[in-house]
Image 1 (tube, rainbow, N blue to C red):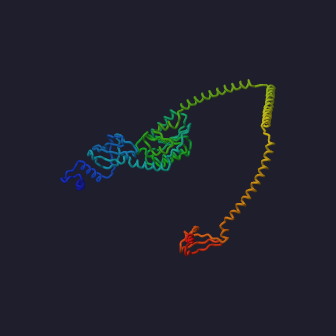
Image 2 (cartoon, rainbow, N blue to C red):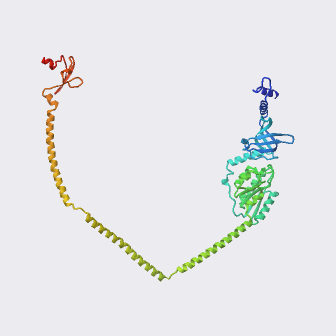
Image 3 (cartoon, rainbow, N blue to C red):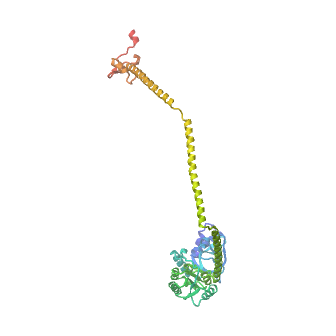
Length: 460
């Protein structure tokens, strides 16, 4: 270790050429050496000076009779702890030995914490709890409510248990009307879990009680270990009647508590939860009796008033018939009037509309004659106009025929154009050795020009 310590110092960049170390370099080197030399280990001791910081970190001292060491459990690890340690608790921590460089304090960085002396049992408890929870054995949807009125209560516990006396005393005081059936069984020692499960199975098979109490007084985790049996948990979950589990004290939890339909913090509390006190039932019965009497009196009073009202309304049959006959006659008259009135009103409205129509209808005979005369004159004018247009069209067609270039070409004339199709009207547009195109009446011809003579040269 000395050789490693020296090599660690030699690797520090803060070391000067003279071999002098800074304090921070020394502390960092010592911290690394401690972390390499002591891997994660389980360390037991007693909690002292426990502090939970606002950041969520836990700071405490772990000590025994001869020594102590500072410890820290950071929030990321502390949130997974199954319990919050208190002053004087015996615990086991899984920690890394290190050094807090800013103060130079040697300390433990705690990764996990458990109660001392029950490490293996607690781990077995957690594994079984997680297994049964994953199977849905603890699902709240499977929990059954306790019956409202309990006539018989079964108790699974030891004959020598102080819890039995507490339960019987509580039931005798609160509910002396309830019948109690005891299913005796050992609640501690080898094989106790299986025997408790057999007692629960017997009670379930007999089905002679309304609620079953599984109870035991307080003790250490080893004392209560029989109630962490897997077979017992499955038997409780499959019991024919609701099961109330009251094992240990309020801070004690067992697998049976999670499997039961209801957990009580103590056996006495289990008895109180299982049976409603007789005084409460009697008080409720008295209140309900008073409410029933009041309701009956109100109903009789209302019925008497209704009878009086009906008696006043009761008439002789002859009077009823006369009244109904008069009522029928009135309805008949009303119906006749209601039918005649709309018809008369509608007839008057039709007459008024007929007079208005006759007064406003125009005289159409003369207009019909004028329309026939206009149609006749329109027909005559149209015929004359069509004849005139036909004559004009024939004249224009003849003139157009005279101006048709094709007729000129048929008389022996030709149209002279250059090769691009432009009409040549003057000899000045012609050049010797060029070509022209002649359009004749029946086709065209391309000619070459030998020479060009203008009109001025001819006159000369």
